[in-house]
Length: 313
Length: 252
Image (cartoon, rainbow over all chains, first blue to last red; front, top):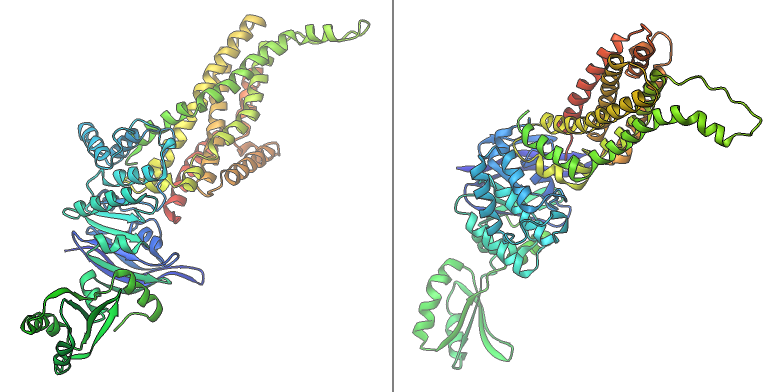
């Protein structure tokens, strides 16, 4: 089933197209990474999908609910972490979660239980009674995630969830996102490419208000794979390279030197066939293999290529 | 009005935690005490400060004078305090981003606005009741006189006028992210309606006329302004309605 669906969603501020004709389908229980440089339209998209901004054109459905017109059923089914979460400074973290539980209409016992569970989850149990006005940026981010989870949302929107966190905090939040994936669809906007690569199943790349590409991470890596295989052996590889030259679906086999070690590098015309047959060819050569790698591009490399050259058709 | 109860509870706690009740009560008590004290002891003060040869004749102070003086102070300074206290109630939440988190929950915009207006109105009404009781007690003790029923009537009208000032301020607070802009425009509206209320023909329809009606009650005058009363109540309702409409229609 589809958790998030948008058709022709657009938001114009006068002549500025903050978001232009976004059409998107996100299946249930995936982590969807929404990538783009600053000002690309990521936060605008989150606001449009959560009903906080009114689209100039188009429509969206989230968790089966139509977005807009003050649809409170939608708000019951989603959780939202804004890019800069803000709280009432005079309230403690525990009080704030309790208050948010009341706004969701949870029963008192459930609120109490859920508050303690979430404080534990985001590691704020000890600081739970401290006023949020004294919280660090990282603590506010954790509390922001906790308040977004209090109603066990079907769809969770996270706008730059790791932006204010130190490396340890970032790791914890990413692990948390991975755990939540079992029951929740997560729409995560970020410009942190390594975070996206680590937790996301699907990626959408947006730039200047336009959605450039949407795909699974795997398909995207395959699409942008450079189809170059690298191998290292313990023995001399001259005759092996000569034998590779006779194979029609391999081109330009060569011995290159990297970090002082000779490496056999070859480009495959048919990458799927090369993946299947190269290991057998190596095995038949009788050489001792020490490294074998298909140079798959990172999300960062794909992102940079798309930003520079546009999407590959 | 989904979510009204927890929002109202939170707003009441905020009135206490941020000392708004203490501040408003303090200001109102100051007026409640100063009116009867000033009237009672002004002749003595003038005698002490004046030239030996000069004779200043002051009429004997009356209870109505004392209570009317208190009402005048609350009607003017109280309105200013109302604007100052309420001008940030929504604007600050829009600016800081707390509104973004709170309104992402299943609550209606009308509950959000009404809870704020009701809580801040209670702060003012409680402060006014306490200050009025103190003023009345001091007036009876120092000046004597009986005007219980007219004074109750005056306070009801005064209270309604202050709620009107608060509602206007809340309305503009939902329109602007700057609390200063919201407060400035609200104050302008209150001043303009106050000026219009002094004009013939249309003046009798203005909420500011409620203050004149209250003073009339004390002095035994028989002029009443029912139109102003009705229009004030409708205006408060319209402020709540448009405030939640503005919040619904704006991009956060």
